[in-house]
Each structure stands twice: as structure tokens, then as C-alpha cells.
Image (cartoon, rainbow, N blue to C red; front, side):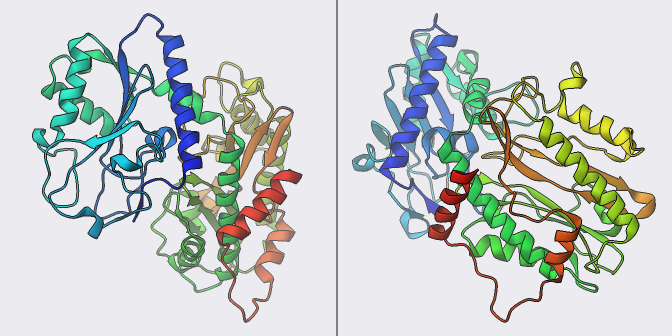
Length: 457
């Protein structure tokens, strides 16, 4: 596992984000003079490779599990690190160890122990109170002077679950703790939603790896192969390029393609079927999400091509309409809602009832990234456009999904290099594989391609 932070340059970026967040907090809550931002990292789970909580990573760049960042309103920052009775360095690798002498490199003023040593090398949300003792003492000082805890605690069913659990737990440690908390999730979402060029470059790298994986899928699909074998060819390319799946890969043949989040991936593909391949690489915490639909035989039937072209026409039409001021979805303003315009486009052609999901979602550190659907699209947004037609009676599911970056005058397709016209998809599938295995994209190659393609985007 790789923990820590990658460079001092990155640390400067994360410090700037913290500074921007504090500016927003002081503007939004100008009446509050005492308090601190408190955010928790994610925790390890032995069944899964560790991934840092997205907003914690966005604000700090720290990849270590179980840590807590506290930043007071004057900007003084402290990283609280769990103490372990065992030698954690023997179990995991950190590029820059989380110790006081590295605090400045990591963008913090101080790095201190969380509390008393916990057994073993892992730390857990249910670790005993004494293992949080130093943090509890310091947070209690804020509460005792009637300070405010600015943290991530939205009132919904799906966001920041671990952090909200820890807030509740700390309320049992510190009287009045939860009452002193103010939710800053909307402010962090505003920051994360607008992607800067550095983030766009990272996302483009993830897209490039996903394009490579889609090419591997197109070459692997054939009569008699299983969905999971196609999945293996996809995820082989992710791993070999230094990434990992951003979400469970979908390889859905025949009727399975009409199940939107099908990922059992165990059926045998047969000639005459279509296969929906909905996959995305995560590279350096940023995600891609691309879908293509392939004919198992290598050629679309007349009926399949008719429906495929209709889905493609829908996507191309919506992409021409996507500009700042439009909405991804807004039922009050259907004439400015890409989702409603896509449904109307398909309804006029007799297929509205077969488009059963939304036209797209925000994309970034999370596959379904933060972003307020109640606000219009704006410069700096990254999102998907993914129309589809699903007809269970015909065992047909078709989806085409690309990733778009909103500029001032319209969208730039980050995944333009991946074939999607029906004839081009057929040609990609029918290419004769060379004796040489398809090469992975290494970091230098991805960087070079990213610079060239974005410069011409």
C-alpha cells in the first residue's frame, strides 16, 4: 500500500485549498470567531485495498488511514496520527512518513500522536477512547470556549458515513460536541466541483487508461467467451497502467445489458448478442467512466445498428446543447435540462420509455462526484453524457457514455479517441491482433499524451 503524500509541490496545492476553504467559511459564517475545521480520514479494511475518503484527500493529500486533520480559523494546521504498539512501517509503506520533522513537507504545522498506543498496526473507528485521548483533549478546548467545529456532516443518507459516525462517537466523549458542529459539505462540494487544469490532466490520464481497456475488451469479445474473461482483460490494463477500477466493472451481454448496474459478469457471450461494457479506471484518485456497446459477432445486425445509431445521435445532440447555464437535470426547466431534452428526443422517435436512467452525472474524485444538480452547469464541470435504450423483450441494451469537460462556450470530450460510430466499433473489433501484447501506458507516456491532447483540445 502507498500512503503519505507525493511531493512538496502537491503539499503547496493542498495548503492553498485549505486556505480557500477557510476564506469561504469566514465569509459564510462571519459571525463565528472561534473554531476549527475537523476532517477524518477513511479507515482500512483488510478485504479491500485502502482508498482515502475523497474530500479528505482533496483538502490534505494525505493517503494514510485513520488520521484526523484539524485546522483552526487562523490557519494553524495539525495532523493527528494514530499511535501503534507494533511497527506499522513493517506492514505498510509511506512515501513520506507522518512524523513531525516532515510536517512542513506534508503541508501541516504539526504532526502529533492521536492518543495512547493502539494494539497492532491498524486503527479502527471503534478504537478505545484512550487511543483518541490527545485529539479529545484538544477538541474539548475548542468546545470549552464555545468554538465551532466545521466538519462534513450533511443531512442525507449516503455521504460521509464514517465521519458522521465519528462525530456521533465524539459527542459521547465530549459534552456538546455534536451541537457545536456546522456542516461544510456544501462548501467543499463547490470547491471540488470546479476542476482546475491539474485535475483535468489527472482525469484525462484515467480516461486514456480506460480507452486502452475498452480496446482490450473489444479484442476479447467473441462467441463462447465469458463476461468475466472480458472483465479480466479490462482490469489487466487498469492494473498494468498503475490504476484500479473506479467502480465494479460492468460487462453485460444479451438481456443482462438491460440491467443497469449488472456486474455478476459470469454468463457466456453468444453471437447475435450485444455487450454493454461500462468501465472506468481510477488513476491517482481521479476517475473515468466510459461505456461502449459491442456486437459479439463483430458486426451489428440491421436492428441493432438502427438502435445503436439512435443512441449515438442522442448523445451527439445533447453534447451540442451542453453549455454553461444548462442543467444536467431540472424538472422545473425542462427546456434547459439535458436529461429532459434527451428523453424528449427519444420520445419523438418512439423510444422514450426505453431510456430509463438519467443523461449523466458529475465526475471527479468519485465516479458520481459531488455537484449540486439544482445549479446550472458551469465552466470547469466534468460530467458524463450517457443515453441508452433498453428493451428486455428483445434482449437488447445499448449505452454510449463519454466524459466531458465544460468550457466557456461548450463541452470538450475527454474520451474522443475511443471509437463510437457503429462502423468504427466494428472495425476496432475486427482488427487482427499482432503477436505483440498490447502495451500499457506508463506514467511518462500518459503525461506526454495528456499535454499534447489537452493542448489541442
